[in-house]
Length: 299
Ligand code: SF4
Ligand code: SF4
Image (cartoon, rainbow, N blue to C red):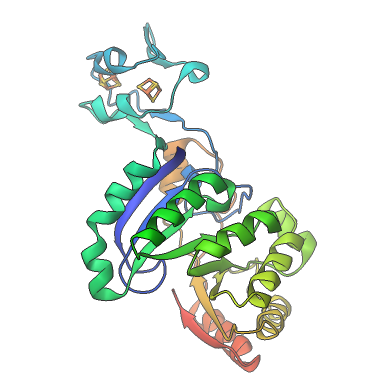
């Protein structure tokens, strides 16, 4: 079993060709610009919209652990006994309850993935494990990779790279491709904007390259955070020195996640960020190209 928050079909930006993306819940980073804030907390939470609730009690009756109770102020959720099954949200006729994720078995995920195998076969696509951080649920990830491998499905792992080398290498044995995010080369700024050190991330990226793993490096580009010349030159030099890696995908920031933060009632540290202007994007491309790297927008 593992915890996921979405399975997206027909994805075209999560690796090569047409893919099914499985989003793992829980991430050790807390990037200011995160566009999947529902994926940060490993625990499932419920979002209740009082304005939509019609007081039908359907959710109370459905809950197997009696974690929802009626109170004068409306439905009250007892997080401590919640099993994270998501049944209440599926039951709510008014869409007043929404679960930020759910527990899922390997079989359940594989049933969803296998439906799309004809598209993988036709397009050369496959499955991408993303998040959140898939390496943070290694047993679940390894089991899914094993099953996909058994069925001949191409397997990509979209990661921040923040994990132990031991977990990374176990996953590398079963994955076909890593989509590996690099954000900031300066250690202090990395810690400021993501909450963690970049040392294990850089070590892990080097390790994958040394082992000859297929790696697609991706750089989310956020104006005022990591689009400065010094950072881009440092990223370019680092990636260009990796054996077998000769390209970087630039992922320009967009503010589409703001509504998610509002809905989840989470603080959005990146609320003031703006999409990089075209000249900044062109400048970033030029700097990375001068390091000898091919640069793609998106990925
Ligand atoms: S997620 Fe499941 S256990 Fe938790 S409150 Fe909803 S129905 Fe009950
Ligand atoms: S099922 Fe939805 S509408 Fe009915 S009481 Fe629960 S939250 Fe309110």
